[in-house]
Image (cartoon, rainbow, N blue to C red):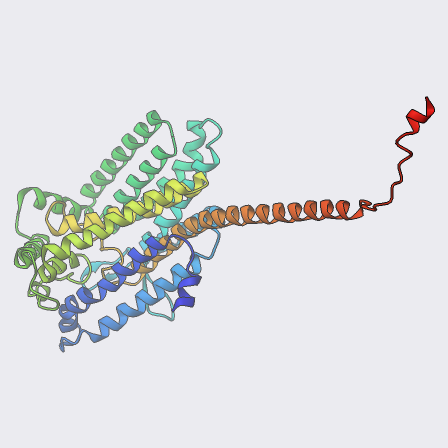
Length: 432
């Protein structure tokens, strides 16, 4: 175990928080999966779901370990190459999406021969954020030309978001917000940012209007769902989403301060997404406000550590990568918690590293691996500086030793004979 820990490079605090969240996830996932177990095979045995979650977490930590060994500047070139690949996957997802368990599944694709579903928008968000960080770090020394940035930066951003929007509005909104935050931090001119925000709002409004005009179209069938969710959130009309929110609030109210205890949740049997979208409500029901605030604190501490890692990064690209990959993770967690307590409409965002799922866990771990790679590079720089100082000190000692040996040699070569080789001291007198 000690040997394994020694092989882990980078920020050990980030490693610790990620491990704590992952370890804690097993208890609520094991408990909340009972609903899925009854619906799936009617036995209520959640052991299979626990083993599946264990496999996902183990693969995720394997991804972190492999990715954090890769120098993070390699991803600068990979993002430019990977963006067209992501577009192909997103287009394939929109075209080949099917209905799974009565829900529109045009945000997932199934990997051939494996049978694993993969949410392409999670991969697209990683590639897009790295792409934006690459552009901003490349333009840091010169002035940004707006017309040129429309082609080099905003056109790829628009294409990516346009391919995600028809199936997943919440992810699109989160990605757009994070891109705006990145360009703001990267000192992109504010007047241009305002124009981009306005254009994005107009584009969304135009998309919604088309969706209202063609409600039966495959690419616009989610517009009615968005509208109804917002309307129900503001008016409290009873529907399926309102049913989930009500059960989540009952779960939170039942937990009180100390909770009902691990595995003793009642509402997990009624919440349809108890192990994913509404797992935070199950956590509060079983572990009380103490457990709920504990999870929230872990995410906030992780956010604080991301800020420190970004501040310590030696390059602008490294700073922006940490912000672009770390902040969305925390904001997604906040959105999930806000939905559970009805501060936001139902969005379908999972709780990172805690909710059950495959691709969402793996992409989160991929992002964490890149972040830790940035901190590893800074750690290596510090180690190199320490090694350089040690080498300089050792060299100084060697030089001092050589100088001392030269002085000793000169002293030994001096003649200390008692023979008087000088002339007669009275010579001067005798000469007079």
